[in-house]
Length: 222
Image (cartoon, rainbow, N blue to C red; front, side, top):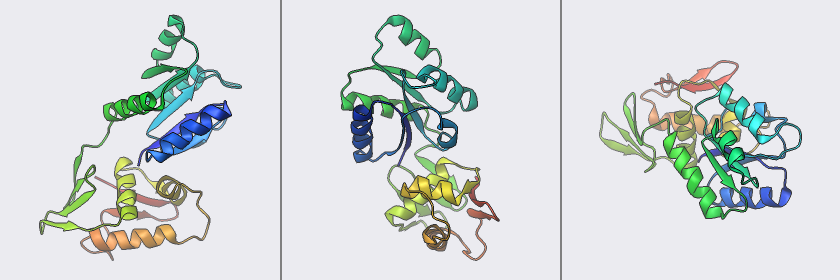
């Protein structure tokens, strides 16, 4: 499940783009301005930005995002068709799509950018595990047996893989995997991590894959 930051102030366009991306399996955070971009960009896989926005325009927001994280692809959306505008956008962004556009064209461009920036190979070796990220399969190399994970367990593991070596808070994990805000005291995440450890760790009582970072959250190191 890829996570998208989408900034668009036109409600009608924002609603159908968000709905279409969500139905295609993407997790979408839709903002109507760039005021809160710094609070949402850290764990996104791609940013889709409208150019004409209240306050800071999409060009300014995109340049700020690229300065802070060059590894996130940016797709600009705009009704501006002048060559000069496209050139300005492509000076920092990875693609520029003019309005009106067909949803199939938008998703095709998103998929191209995600493939270009893919950080993890389709196959990842992690300690005694071989993880096939596209096929959603996990193999124990010591036994050559497949480890059967539920869909949510695999999405949780996949989210860790997409953020290898990063310390993730409970709030980030819950929002990234469940798509909802974390409520303090909710034990859903803790229970899923316990069950996941029981399946993938050699000794779940002393986990070496999913580390607990006391007082903060969890981390998977390669």
